[in-house]
Image 1 (cartoon, helix red, strand yellow):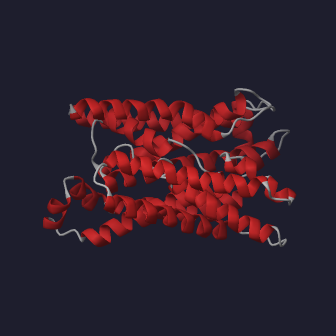
Image 2: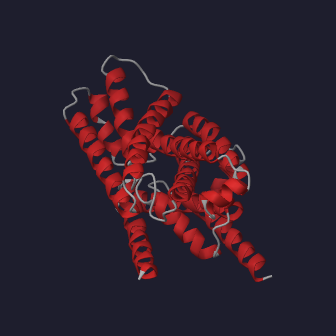
Image 3: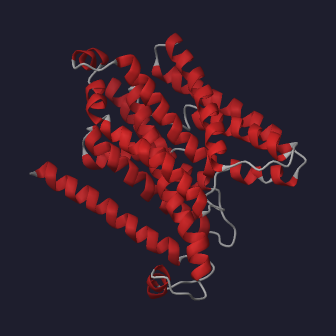
Length: 335
């Protein structure tokens, strides 16, 4: 009974927070829109704020929710794969690898005056994510201590970020120079077309991850146990890698690298629900990531308005302390 109550309270709280943040994000900004005007605009009526709400704020809100959920889910899958609560797409350098290949792709095409579509951006990001993941997996086969793997992932991320910054800094084209803002992480400039593409990529990945709840739960108890339960370990691990890479690639393609969400949110959700069961963690992580990124985006837009902070700066401010707490708790458990 207590577990069921905790589930109702947990999911209810996440849904209420999500709805409140959606309304708050629509309302907040240089143009104030009252709740009554928001409802009127949503029902199709015009007004002074209709263009801003429908064309700018709502696509950004949906993007922040979808990409935040994708990032948190990607972090949960990576933590399952490596059996480490500190693993995440940003910390392991996967987001930085996606950023590097995506930046190089944009520079090559934009310098020749060729526009790049949303799907092409995701494919380029996915290739970069898989490249970084390949290095991480290679290192994981050589080292036995997970701390060394995390350090190696951080170094891969720094190398990729350094090369990306170098290329962007010395780019001549004005459109390429604008990549610097994207490389810091931002949900600005999202269109309804972008939202449609990211939803077509992220939502099927979410459904597939949910369908894998039973083998994920078995894998959490150890590879031997999972094998005894009939799980094809090699195929299962490959699917986890592909899913986490697709999710992190979609985030990087549209919003740039966003730090610490993939580590902090799964840990917070695990603490709130007091369980690691995939049937609960997968939807809770997705909702938690959406709430976390909507809150951080609201702060990024309004804290020092009209100046907008990069989303990664805000997520790092809230996410990094959670990572430190996880490390301290893990160290205490090993004593």
